[in-house]
Length: 562
Ligand code: DGJ
Image 1: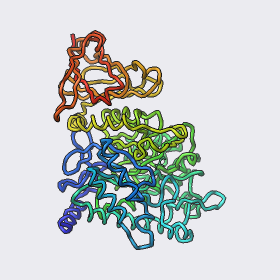
Image 2 (image 1 turned 90 degrees about the horizontal axis):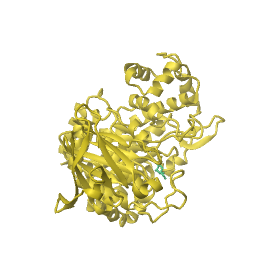
Image 3 (image 1 turned 90 degrees about the vertical axis):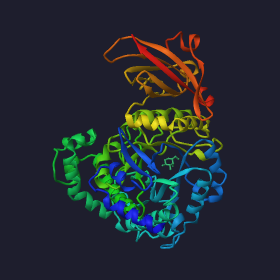
Image 4 (image 1 turned 30 degrees about the vertical axis):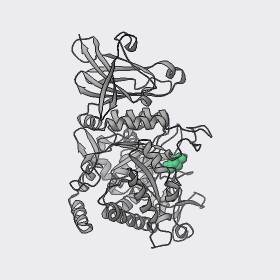
């Protein structure tokens, strides 16, 4: 089989057209041989596994969990019981290449075997040169040899604990280890397809200063912006991220010059400079991995807190304002992903959703918040998947996420598990709705009623908080799945009321013809009560309950206009 697979892979790589955009390029690499790959289908770019669309209902492990197969043994069945279909699993450089040139895949193989035994898929997170800006997951032979593997330096010439993305020695060693990992995965998993995708590095960028000040970095900063980047920006001018375009135009829209001449003398220029460097470095690593085994690959971003400057946030990471620089520098990446821990989830998710950038959320809050948010990204942004962070503790270990959880707070992922169960039962309808572009979703964030008014076919749904949710300000999410022009399945998270109106030409008034609650019984959605009277505000509204999730209840709503 290995020979056959190798032939297929070689052929796949040969037919991949280098000029295709992110996402679309990958659609070629794994097509026709069952390998996980991205493919444009109708209005959405989807992840196909064994030639079928696959919606990732996932969770990411805590950083250290997957260093031990034994530690993970009891965890896998718990994750499976939470109705996840995919687990995001770190694989560290120090684990697979503890001694230079000597590779050990015992842990990787153990993880693969136990994931399979629990019917779970995996997304591998390559903790190579960087993990959250630092280089703490590199092997000792890299960490301790600073002369050979140089570090990012501060402006006063001090080394930091971050490898420099300007070092080709670092880059080549990282790329070689990554290529070995991908080679091994092809041999160990090229037929079973347990591993769906790979994240290359983790939340790269530089802090606490906005750029590397090593001699080689200073020289690159004083040199002209590479011609390849200038050509890309000029060619894609009208589609550029507005902030990037405004920055470039404010500095005179030059087509040649140093970084400060082209983008201005501001900290943001340091960020754009580092973005190009991280992107071109990661391109090298990604291409080396894909040459061995062309799974979809992506890079993830730590987002920006309000009013933070480059260096306070990860300067150079794949952020919305630098997405075009990343696309130009790292064409082998299939997409860029946001790790969204902020309450302003909707804005960040939408900013990463572009025709050339399918949305995947690798890290986010779990619990009820995650259960509401997954409805939004699946329905509004046609996401290929969602994953909550730190799912392996099941609320038993306090999860301290600065600014998100209070110290010691435990996140109960029962609601997320129930949501995953419901969505897995609706997977076919959801992926079909993504293809036709017919899905819609609403989210109520914090106290704001944002994204609460949403088009549902030819109707408009108005979602407002009801009951306990109003007092607690907890998140509400609603997904609408069209069955026909006037009939929808509705999945909710939280206490809410939904009224319907019409903004499109035609009869002005919308009536509720019927609302039925449905439960999944014997493999099919089956109606129970016809909801009317007090249960639907005398025919005026659909009422969603926080308990619907745990009960496994969805609604079938028929509307009419007069
Ligand atoms: C973001 C990182 O990408 C994760 O690995 C983890 O460190 C979380 N922050 C929170 O702890």
